[in-house]
Image (tube, rainbow, N blue to C red; front, side, top):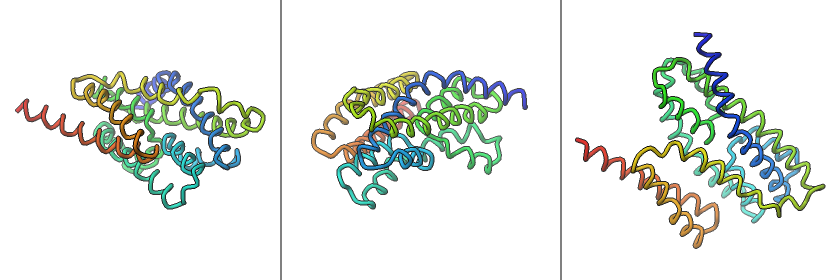
Amino acid sequence: ESDAARAEFRRGLGESFPIVIGLTAIGFIFGALARAAGLTWVEAGLMSAIVYAGPAQLIAVGLMKQGAGFVLIVLTTFLVNLRYVLYAASLAPHFRDRRPRWLAFIGFGLVDAAYALSIARCLRDPKAPRKDAYYLAVTLFIYLTWIPASFIGGYLLESLPEIRDMGLEIVNPAVFIAILIPLLRGPAEITVALLAVPVTAGAAAVLPHAHAVLVTIVLISVAGGYLNWLRRRSST
């Protein structure tokens, strides 16, 4: 079992490397945006270390810059992060041979990229042992690069204030599009992905950014659930 764990750990490190490059750039951007919102570079790095939820962190600093209150920021980031409950429920059947205390410990590292890579690994080879080691490698690699990237991004803002004008924000959606494309394996998944484009654009046109994200998540989740229900109904 230890050999299987080491093999899965090495596989996780190798397969997460391209994603980590993009996420490091996003961490750098977050640090810069956090400084622009009034945080120190130390606070930006600590936020990444403790909160550790990239999209929620970006939303939070955006709300800070707009002068939003503490309660609104906490509530918004909480609602955005509820998707991690669904991620955990999706991965749990593949880790049922592991102790609950171990899963609770490594669960802190459950972020979008770690989930996408891990669930893809689980679906490719459901019977492979020690897939939790793969997940652990991915989460450690992302976590240990995301934090220094946030520190560096925040620290360099004063010496490189023009970083905000470089158009690096495109890295964030680009990385997540790259993560999602391999998971679009059926008509329902492709339909939901295509539907997300006009829904996001429409919500962003009439709502503040954070609210638009929440509305899009709810509507697309409902649409995906309905399409999945129709597919199972037609197969019975």
